[in-house]
Length: 133
Image (cartoon, rainbow, N blue to C red; front, side, top):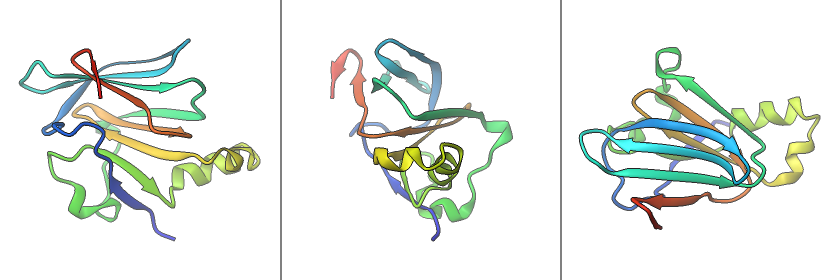
């Protein structure tokens, strides 16, 4: 089956490109800090607890293929959930199918400086300018 890239709309007013200002994995979980280009708008995405897998790929080293959602490739849409994910299939192989028992979702966040991919079992906590969404 082909991958399906579905628009994930975690922040209703999240339009325009973002820069990743920080990504770190510590006690609360995986935290991603984004800043909207040309504004003061900041978003924190927290994948709380145990994250099965994540990776950051520098934008110079990865291009999004047209097959990965050509209608979703506009400048304003940068958050996706991927169905039939190759990333999750590879994770299944690497974990000897242990990851298959965790009901994971493949999240993709496209920023101006790279692509962040996360395998996680529920929606993350989103905070905009200090206010939970």
